[in-house]
Length: 270
DNA sequence: AACAGCACCTGTAGGC
DNA sequence: TGCCTACAGGTGCTGT
Image 1 (cartoon, rainbow, N blue to C red):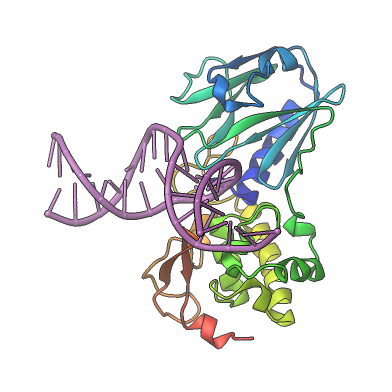
Image 2 (cartoon, rainbow, N blue to C red):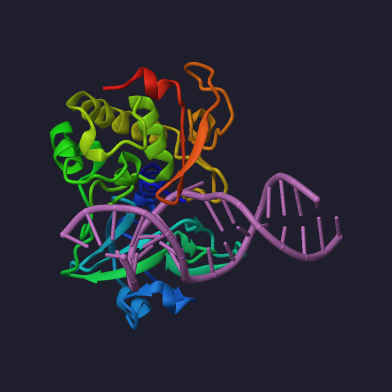
């Protein structure tokens, strides 16, 4: 469910609330959500001070006093919310971290997410490409030149660029006027430059709207995002293109649903 | 070595 | 109402 804008929204609203807090206790309700298997997560973080919370790609990274770190990945259906102790826990609550101001709760019905203990030496950006909001077109171009996969599929590869998922890949490609099916290494320099700009524009706008809520996504206060109201292609199959009125096409690419305007991508060749 | 395909899980929406 | 199928914001493994 959550891509970069949704994770960024959660991190921004949680950072001030966990900063400097001491973990009173952690309750691991589903040990198989903890990695590596066998980690005594509750034991590791009890009585520890949280000194920072940052996002890297789609990961939420907690930094503890003393240098230990761990991160939470929300998978498709994960939520990380801060709630008062008295509020009943939702079904599929797998982890509760008790801190001064309440309980940080990880809820994840599909369990594609997880909690990853890094200790002092584990690197939260292992296997992740650059942050798209800090990426230069030259770097994007060099990375895309190494693969012949469809550009849409390449954008979903977290080691090529970190944080883009199915919604924002489609939205950025539409904004750049690029056919999602063309080979990544066949983009012209102009197209790479447009795509780099579109990725930033779309992600920044989505963050301003606090992310997209299609079904599951909620922020740290349980509130939905609003960016879905201004999606231009994602989840708009058959609806008129907001630029030219042509019905939006949905295809399956690399196993993921993919949306584009058949007319706009022809107008924007090269 | 890169890449496509599928598996992992549960919930929900839509068709009949 | 209920049963069935399709599909969902992600990623990791397997086999080619």
